[in-house]
Image 1 (spheres, rainbow, N blue to C red):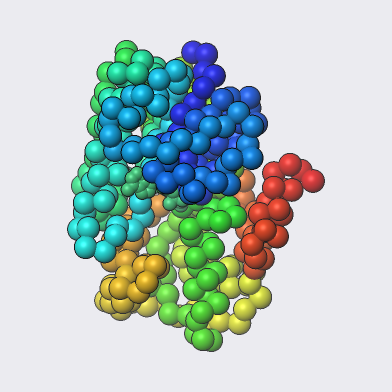
Image 2: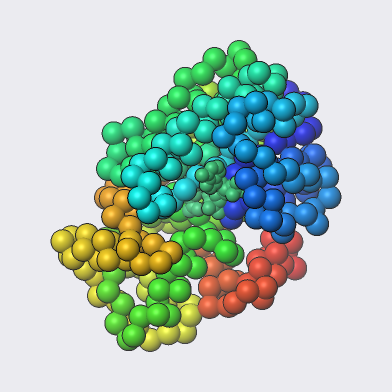
Length: 320
Ligand SMILES: NC(=O)c1ccc[n+]([C@@H]2O[C@H](COP(=O)([O-])OP(=O)(O)OC[C@H]3O[C@@H](n4cnc5c(N)ncnc54)[C@H](OP(=O)(O)O)[C@@H]3O)[C@@H](O)[C@H]2O)c1
C-alpha cells in the first residue's frame, strides 16, 4: 500500500496536532477537515498541510474532501458532553461519525481508515464515553476489509504539552487551598506519550498486517491517580496534602465538579475510572515503538507555562 495523502478528521486537537506534525515530517501531504477553521490555525505553518473547514457530519461533504486521499484518520472525540446533551454528543461523535467517515471513504475509494478508540472501550462498559467508543470501534472493525482496511487504536490517558490530563491535574492542584480532595484515588492508569501515539498511527499507515486489528497503547508504567497527582504536585513545586475520597464522596464531588464551568470532572468521567486504564497487550512494541516514560516528558511542561512548555517538549523530541 503506497500512502501519500492523508486526510484527518478531528485533527485540530491535542493528539491531532502531533499526528499531523509527524505525518508532515515523514513527507506526507496532509488534509485536515475541521468544523471551525480557526481551531486549526496552529497547523497552518506546516508545509504540505491543507486546513479545510467542513461539516464533517455531512457524508456528501466528506466524500468530496476525501477524494484523492490514500488514507483517512479519524481522531474526533469528546470527553465531556455538552450539558443537556444526554448521550447525544457521544453517540453522534463516537458511533455515527466513524460510520459516516468509513462510508465516505468507501464511496471516495480511500483504501485505508485509522480509527481512534480508547482503552476500556466496550459497548457494555461502565460509562457513556466507554460504551459509545466501544460501539463505534466495533462497527468500523466489522466493515469489509476488501473495500477499506481498518486499524483501531486504544490508548490509555495520553500525556504531552497541552494534554487534557496531567495539565488539568496541575491546574486543579494549583487551585486547591492546601488540601487536595481527590476522587477515585485508587483508579489505575498507564499513561502513554502523545509522540508515541502519533508514531503508532504513522507506523500502521503503510503496514498491511495491521489491518483489521485494534492496538492497545500504553506507557511503561502503571500509576494510581493518587501517585500521579502527588507527582504533579511535586513538579509544580506546591505543598498540598492529597486526601483520597471514598466512593460515595467521589461520586458527589463528580456531580459538583461536573456542574462547574468547563466541567473539570463529571459523573461519566468518574464511571470511566471504574475500569483500570491499563494494557493487556503491548501495542507500541508490536509496532516497533519503545514507550517513552512519563518522567522523561512531564517535567518539560508540568510546572512550566505556555510557550516555554511547548518549546521544551519540541527540543526533547528533536534531541536538542
Ligand atoms: N487525550 C487523551 O488522553 C485520550 C485518551 C484516549 C483516547 N483519546 C481519544 O483521542 C481522540 C483525540 O483526543 P484529543 O485529546 O486530541 O481531543 P481534543 O483535543 O478535544 O480534540 C478532539 C477533536 O475532535 C473533534 N470534535 C470534537 N467534537 C466534535 C463533534 N461534535 N463533531 C465532530 N468532531 C468533533 C475536534 O475537531 P474540530 O473541532 O476541529 O472539528 C477536535 O479536533 C479522541 O477521539 C479521544 O476520545 C484521547
